[in-house]
Length: 325
Image 1: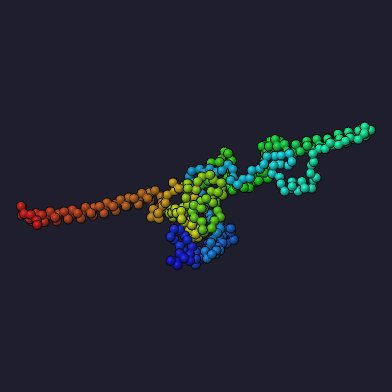
Image 2: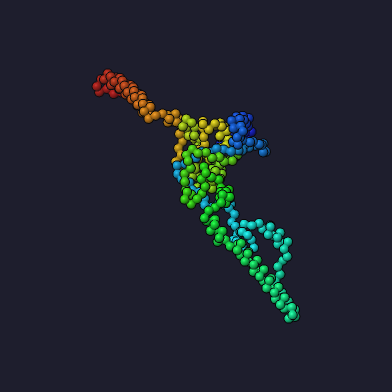
């Protein structure tokens, strides 16, 4: 009861005291001293909250699907004749508009006498030529066909970095139309930033959102895979970060794997201790167990045969025609 009121939740109806979890956390941070995998903790309303990066290994057998576009990708407006490109800053445009004099509709003016008409006509022609040049310059600047053709041939490194900046990669893999469906290398490691209040489905959702994976979180599960071969699935109400702290920081002893919900299989310790043996050794184990089974069966048969003989002897002692009351 004390751990429930003043402790950290590990799973459904499972609690651990703050003193114990802080002791494990100290060991965990000492192991990762000087690395970004160290965890931080704080208390909010008398509740201990631990947060940091959690390593998760890929253990998928089926391919996953990556999104074609990000959910938060900004849609740029179409190009217009008043901007250099579609992504220009509207604030700068507003400031420039304030500095410039507002355009007014053309007004009819009375021309001077005929002796000055030649000068007025020349000035009018010059103004019209300047306006035509300005308009043509603006049209050339906003024409996007040439830009599209140049980008279609080859993107500069800065453009490529800008395109990939909003998306994480899975071991260097980014989305493209040819490899949108692929399987991550088995055993490769990634990490997600979570806290001790997040359950297994929430951690799965964070991981899938990080890499923009279209698959549903219900298709996957997290497993604790020990060096002995033991494999335990984390339940929906388990807290992976707390479980990781309790298992210890060394990933040579225990790792957290992402696997398919229907393909993953739990392996108890009793079975796991035999997995790493060679086939001839396992075959000898089976032979020994079979021999032991035959011996036990023979003992049972001998025992019941002896009891049967005793019962038959007792039945022979009774005179014929007598009945037992």
